[in-house]
Image (cartoon, rainbow, N blue to C red):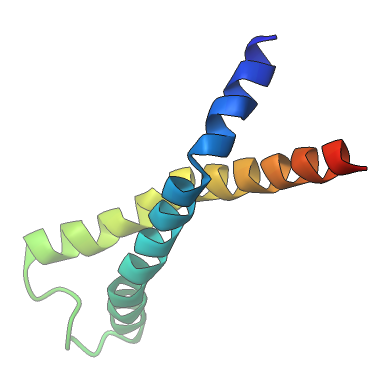
Length: 85
């Protein structure tokens, strides 16, 4: 019963969930460039300032809620599809 209430609530928040995923993916672009620079050790972006490195490394941690969010979106979609059939 609690799970059904959760899914009903989550269905009303799907636009917000997709918006969150959009923002996290946009934030991954500078992280991708930073990580590539850190790996290649060219020094254009990585290791310029410790605060910048901390922020760009921290972007990696927002992937965790994004992965959970994608999983919930997928389950919500499957539940919605199964209700129609």
